[in-house]
Length: 361
Image (cartoon, rainbow, N blue to C red; front, side):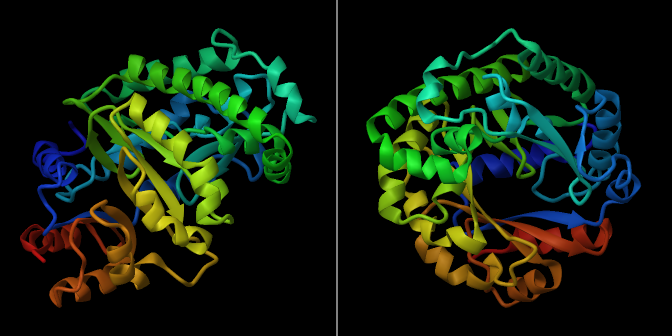
């Protein structure tokens, strides 16, 4: 892999990590400031944009990921097909898809306007696997598979399943009301939504395939097996009992179809779900996502979360200076993957990795 000189060593470490053989160690992605993000920051206007030119997107990913060539951290460079991270699923059912550029990450994300005025209208929906957006999706996967070969990986992307799909088609408020008013029919809808997600994910694996028997992740990693990426965002403002009734079954069914999955929880309003999420069958790792508007960060709760997550690894973002102090003091919980931000430069990152490779707790 051209954009990661030591990728074989990294993959060997990650195999041990996901096999549960490294529970006394830590892993890290060293997040050095990116010149490519500055260069491409103004390439698109604010607000809604058209579906982007794939050549421009490829130029960005090559510029961005090539910066990681000499890093010896535990990350693997992978392009994320964020153009289809959310909007694709409902677009396959006839919804209008919208794209927006996020300069802080370099990604183009997608959403869709709610498609259904009434919940019961979902029965009229048909999955169009040969329509415009289905073909654009397949074309983009083929394009990046060709562009990325020998240089970088293609990451899996988020599933929009269960209550997440209801959010997309009906809007969040209506979706919660629908659960109350149509509980039995909602379960039928979840079965339908799962089939849509299976087609999207199966198509991804058919076209992209596996690399050395594993899947590239938008978390900057490589994971053994066919691994999918899930979200439990709709349950962040709900009780654990609500998640048990309306979330667990959906998660476990999609994880069981593949070789498991990773999921994320938002620090601001979802941290009460950490322990419950760690007991979901098939979950491989949980990312605790910080929000820019919230001063309460996940790294401030390392010992607390270490107790909540059982044996499931966490992904935690932490500033470089705090990370180094805690590492020197032996205070970093092991069996975690740390996204270390604000690293001054690659040389500093690689020097820190020498200590990370030796760290035991």
